[in-house]
Image (cartoon, rainbow, N blue to C red):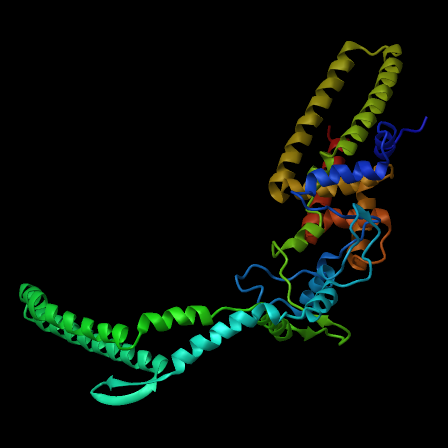
Length: 412
């Protein structure tokens, strides 16, 4: 009887539709808060190379290649229907919908009428001409300009006083008389501080400094119309054309910046052997192998073997196992456990061949010459196992494995 797949078992053990079961399990893993998790099915494969760029530098977002910027924008610009499971984008684009929305907003002037009227009165008060003395000269300026002139005079006086104070400090320091500087600062310095403060008082009383700032607080308020126009200006300033000139592209930032690494599985052969399906298959294969060995043992017990011969054979077996263990440790120490495990996984694919190691060597050489394209499923799996392993390491491990097998056969 054919064994049932995990999907079939899941569907039989659940009264709900299998698509809902898959969605519920993925939603528990990825869903968050009050947001709706939308799953696209059939799934759409994304090529990691399309979005890949160097993210090691802190300025990587500024130097992101144009093709990557365009690909990320096109991916984020797609809109999906509000549904737990969708077949794909609905054809509408977020940037187009957003432009349509903001261009259809028209501010209501009736709501701003009283506010604009009050602003007009406040502005007229600021622009009313007044006559006063500034820097020893009679001037006729608007209230806002007069406040600025008087406050500027205060800042100039304060800057002059700071320059004098710093120069005096250097002079006393050169004479090594900091106590004298302290006495000067507490006497003449105190008087100069009061003189400078009087100029600030002039800006407050004659220049209406605080009143001007208060009125500016009322005038410097952004209206909804201004906020809308600012949004349109920012969109226009950030807009650029796609490389083929067929669409508009806006800058987007994906978080984390190296999100494209998640599109490529980062699994080693050791990780794959820890998968549930792999462990179950390995367990069943070992059970079958154990039954076969028990049958062979039963056949061997029929044949009478002298005790001396049995002891000799057992010694040979222990010697071979010891040499094999030493060779395995040397191989791992020289090339690393990951590389050795990956190459042994390739050899196990052709375990039914007459010479699995030679067969694996021939296939690896063909794959290395052909590259990643136009490979059969088995060859693609082998390519994924040896990807990133240097060619000399592959040849070294295969030669060592061949030597171990020959040594065990000829020199027990």
